[in-house]
Image (cartoon, rainbow, N blue to C red; front, side):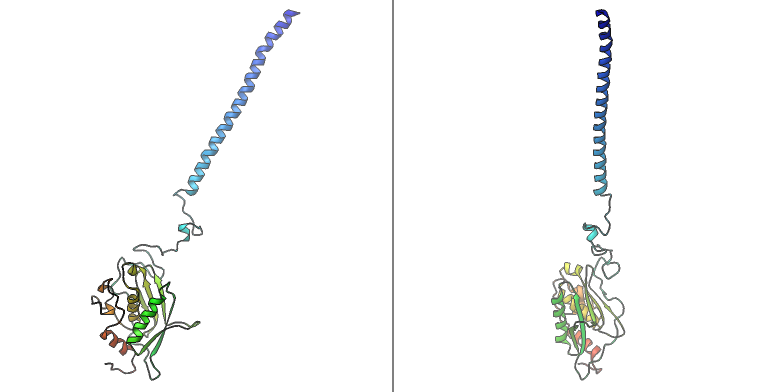
Length: 252
């Protein structure tokens, strides 16, 4: 009987060891599998993070990031497009008029000067410069009265601001109507804002560019240099504008 028990025990020991080894192997394999899965998950997360925020992804216009908030063209450099004009020249053009300047304006009569209204609502902080430029012309030319447009009325001259160069765009067959653009590039170079606006008003009143020229000439524009702050037309410029709007052909 004892011999049979010893034989049975001897036979069971290897089986027990085998079962334990088999169980341990299964648990180890499962643990290793969990580690591998964690590593793969971490790698995929890193890949998704890289793909989602890396330089290869371009946000849409609806995003709240810098590119999503930027206005197209507003931040354009040389050769880009401004908000209201075509390709921006690398330098301030000598002739900054778009289109043709009409030959004559409405004629002042016995009822007083010709009233020309302007809208500086889109002038982005340059309303003071616009008022000063208008005053320069009103004090110099009795035939013209530049005034802000009344609320709810359409202005003769619309004034806007761009990141490009200053300019004027006359409209219609008569002087005194169109758009004046205040260009921030010229201001960044040091050109005086009041002189810039007064110069562009000069185009709306019938004057051509006169470059190169001295600082005393308003229509000499950029050629007088950034240090020039004169915003008052000279004698010849005053005479020409008076003729453009005078009821009589002769103006002294």
